[in-house]
Length: 202
Image 1 (cartoon, rainbow, N blue to C red):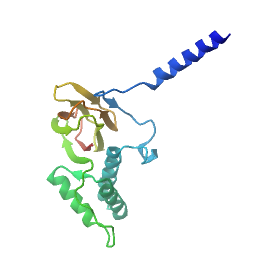
Image 2: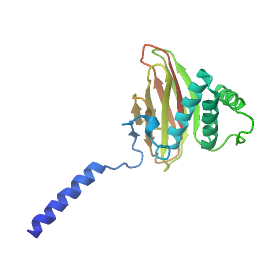
Image 3: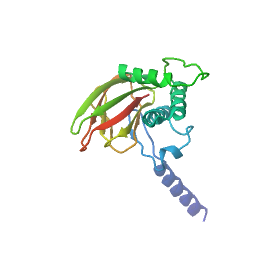
Image 4: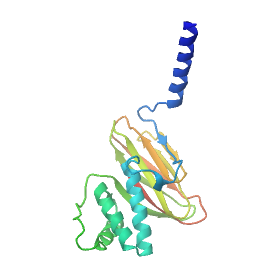
């Protein structure tokens, strides 16, 4: 009877171990939200996801001329230390900051937080970006579409080994590089319309 009980406990433990899974170094993880992004608490989402969400809020608020929502999103980006990578994105950030009402908290300027950029791809077009990620530290890329179809994202390390392949919105990739190295990020729009999106690196 005791032996049978020990056997059952061992089987249950093995099932739990298999269900939990493991993620080793340099192994990519593509996540997909099972609930709407807005329903996920900010404390649960990673910093890159929070930056991507704030960027989407700012872009939509600017188009809708919603100054209150734009101010909230802009302050959120500053709090997260989001840094634009291109001149166009830096100009957009200055435009968003200029819309802040008097008495708003001062902006900290460029910080060592997640970096981001906006991009546009015509139907059938592709683009390649390069980004360096630190070895032994969790790396993350988040892509959020503001208009048009969702593109395909492929990330390869310095050895041209694929560490992420994703095409479902929201696109989220996580992996841990074994050492600090430059990665190639390929984005392909296979849809019938132009795709406009933000991509965040952390």
